[in-house]
Length: 72
Image (tube, rainbow, N blue to C red; front, side):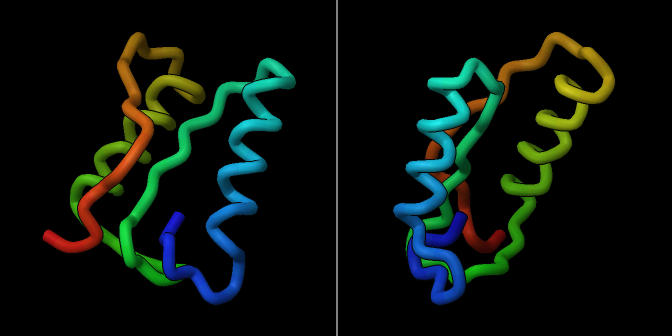
């Protein structure tokens, strides 16, 4: 989620991620510092693919939360 998102405030993503965790639902919040609503980077796409590998394919992979590069 971009911290400069002008459509969905970043704080809503933080609250949503926290609520999912409190409900026992797996969630990974990826943050693009100073990024807009939509952004791309290799690191972001790689991390999203890891998320799908884990949650759709059942692979044992580690997904790191936190900042991601907003451009490569």
